[in-house]
View 1 (tube, rainbow, N blue to C red):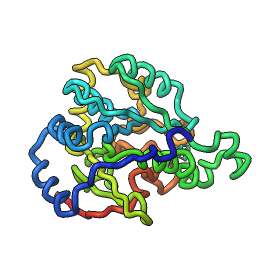
View 2 (cartoon, protein in one colour; view 1 turned 120 degrees about the vertical axis):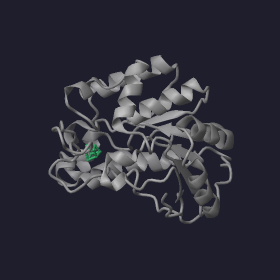
View 3 (tube, protein in one colour; view 1 turned 60 degrees about the horizontal axis):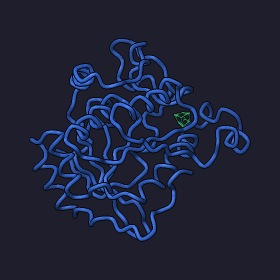
Length: 257
Ligand code: SF4
């Protein structure tokens, strides 16, 4: 697994207290995304990192950070089951932004997973498949960070309607280690995202032009019809709506604005 073990002697900056998180959410309500990114950079420096699967919001966030000269590290989860177009997009984005995007790989290859859990696990137990291929690599990465920057948007789905601008999660129950999750794109609409991408000619996944709206692994991504939710094309046939990376950590502060 890439970068799964904690950096030796890593000392994360102190996370905000629960009271501070609540105050920050109120304070940030009228702020712009660049202002939120600037706060994260000032407080956490390069111990804040952008996690992206190259959906539109992540691309805009990378662009706004780049324009402001905020050199956040960027990482992605490479499940080994991504579309060729997605892998090619990574290369194009690295060129466009002039940075290296870190790929986090699962411990098991797709073949090793099939040997242990049987073939095409995603058809029988997508939760377990997502745990092996996404959640565990992410959990390893977060050990090295103080702040995780996401492209979550409230408009995307019911399960995301209440995301806070700043959230505090417990990363390690035994040590009490916490991590800040900043969702600076929470208030953007899909229309605003795509207007920004087109205006600034940011490379994006060409599958979006073929009817795919939210793009993940090949076996679990379908095109969506007009009028369907943005994430309706993910895990078709299952009740599953989240891969687990945004739901596996216990939230420390349940705060809504
Ligand atoms: Fe497995 Fe599908 Fe999850 Fe990808 S999205 S890790 S293929 S269940």
